[in-house]
Length: 282
Ligand SMILES: [Fe+2]
Ligand SMILES: [Fe+2]
Image (cartoon, rainbow, N blue to C red):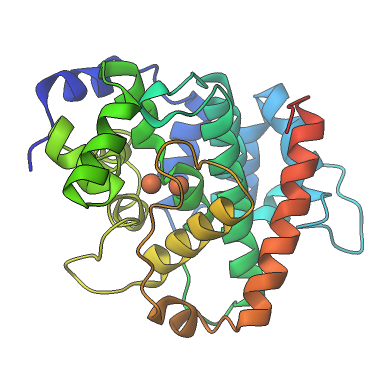
């Protein structure tokens, strides 16, 4: 299904990614880049540098020694987590009401931010599951297509909900049939426009339907992170859970039921912290 022209134009018109994010995206593709070179990319951006140091000392990443320099933070976090930090700030700034999905300003950002946290936790507890380091970036961005759709498509969530009910189809299918495309393919188009590695684009593209090339750890991690983010009550809006989860995902990632419950508990703690940090009401 082709993405409508006005959405493709919208992707072109969207504010560009911050320069630091563009440089980190390029660094993600370069296996030979050193921590010192990456630190240089981050150091020139004062706001980012402070956030990066704070994140490296957060409960999720903290080690025995407190981190005080950008270089040490780069070593502890790695390029993909740095990119998540920078993109998270960008998405927060881009936050808009999304009436098409019945989500208020910040709902979409918060949903991506907690999905990113969940993916980081999955990576941490399953280091041998072959999950790429870029999975938290993919989880952060998995619904970014909704941002584009909400900005450039004048439609109402009630139209989609009514269609889904009457035709007995999923919300994503209603998007495809009523609007001509769904937020997953639009998000993937934006990720391609932003020149993200293919694994990130794939995870965004296939977070609601099985990938034609079969399961992959990055898609599995993004789907599970989305489930966790919904389970803690973010990003529900008009579509609700809207998930048809492949029962093989948890098995492939080696996540027992108890691991999943722990993941949900930790993510709900992070959600409460984020709400407090940003003064957001429940
Ligand atoms: Fe989605
Ligand atoms: Fe989602």
